[in-house]
Length: 529
Image (cartoon, rainbow, N blue to C red; front, side):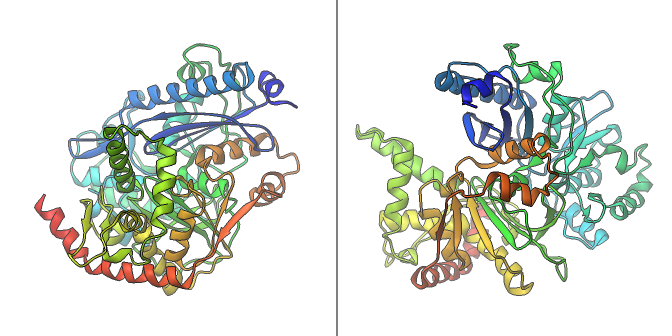
């Protein structure tokens, strides 16, 4: 069926993902082929010491994104989206959105970026004998308890951003198992929140005398392929205030950006993995076996169908790199020679690959916020050089590219060297890989392994959640998620692979040694400003 008729017939699938700096929508057909897209730029705010987004910004952003999608559909096909076959919502994982019994937000949304939860995470990690990261939702709730925050007795429900948006659009308080595994530990056998951990948490907070039990506050957990409700009339108006969008479309379980990244890169089968590199970065390796022991820099989450995954999450990735590119764009504007932003990235990235493999001695820290993998609760972006270093444009941009994956390398060394985890295929996606070959080459040098990128790499998590929405309605054969992706979506899809050169590996390792030796400088910068 031609796209125009497919859209008019309400047979297209919509995926929406709320990322850190952009909300994106992808409209796809039953085979997962993208038909149109829309986006809306937004940014978090640091308010009263917490990184947050207002709920008003969530809904104005979603409406702006959907309106932009409608404009793209109109421009391409001369029609409007009025009915959908299925919908999926994804968002940045973790964080804390707490509501009372009437559905009122009790405290400003605390995103994954907040690192104030150290005492709570440490205590829960010891209690569960499981690494509880700072950004996980239960770490946030327990930190609120430790801090004596007044809203805690009134909490009736808490969830992630994806869970909140899904609730408002469908009326159901549910969460996909992958996103749920970023709230608190999940039992791989039941594919639900770990009952043992829930019991231990309830005993821990019992002296506080709260009227609630933890299970009462948590969303229902669903796996990929399960029906997670339908678009209500109220939800349709929230997404599309024009009133054209009709209710009734079924939803897949809401997922986090880690899960949609796995789906978008066909990395849900054991011994496969992916690296998402944008404002933050994370690697996801689907495990064959449990790790021998908990590691502070390794998070255990799940695929959207419940398989265990080792995750290395870094708070910072391309944010500082983007700031430098914007600076050079501003310079060109000042000189009367403005450049297209995409072309500017391509030129600078490719020029960087002509720099020295060790960046000529330049060291960059991209810590816009704290970086738990290296032990920083707060951060300061830095560029360090000595008078004898080769300070030129290529080395400057190359150092920023290296900084974007440096912490990821440190975390994955624990996974590969200490735990002996093996991976057959590692696929990259996200903004770092938009310029062909460059992000792959840098990441391949960092991890010492070939990196694949699919032609759909730029579609990202919005496309991944669209595929999960399609899995709900297009899986008459009852295939597993891995088989569905292999047979129905990725069969025959071109893949570009870049293997690291010995020179690049040696250069990156030399740069990383300098990076590690300069960590005390970053510590001093945090103390002094």
